[in-house]
Length: 88
Image (cartoon, rainbow, N blue to C red; front, side, top):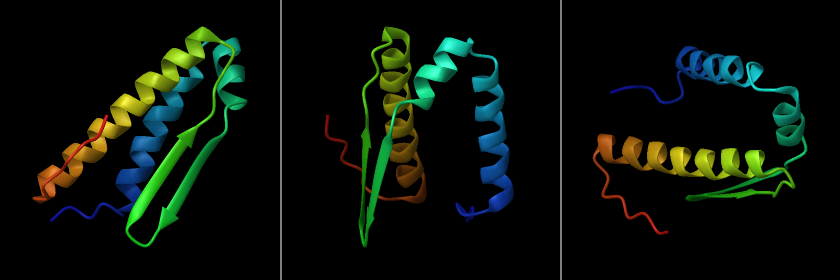
């Protein structure tokens, strides 16, 4: 079984994400840096809330990110064998 907590795998993924963001225009990086993300961890749940931006491009990135992370998380649990119910 794949160790989802493997620091090497995580670090590689985060480096790739940082590399992509480093290529974004300065106004996008600046806009994203002002958006607050709240993550609440409980014993058996996670809640993620992402703030809003006044920049329409940043809002598009936020929506895309939430969509992609939601799909990635759902697929990860499905791959392990869990039944996943995704609420929209």
